[in-house]
Image (cartoon, rainbow, N blue to C red):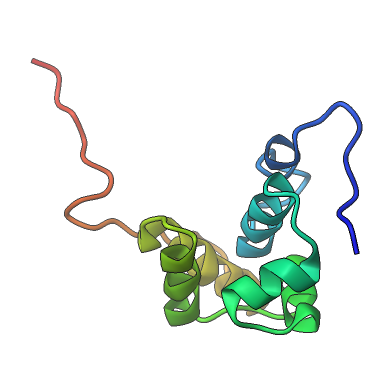
Length: 115
């Protein structure tokens, strides 16, 4: 199975633009997958989940716990903070709750103060 190319648009750029709804963890994972030109089967194997599960996450039919989001981040070589933030906000939207979680750690992001 091959990934479909989006004509004239970088896959990451496509998914990382808001598309009429807030960005989800599924959007982020899809952007990584398409950016690496991997099939659902290849990327799901890398993440340690089934292709059907990955498809459901990307289509927002299933949601990821903050712990699993952190594991995905580590496998992809990224800090867990943003992946956990996306997962928490997805869960809030799933429950119909308003608001947004902004998750910060000591290391991320470091705010620079004007001198």
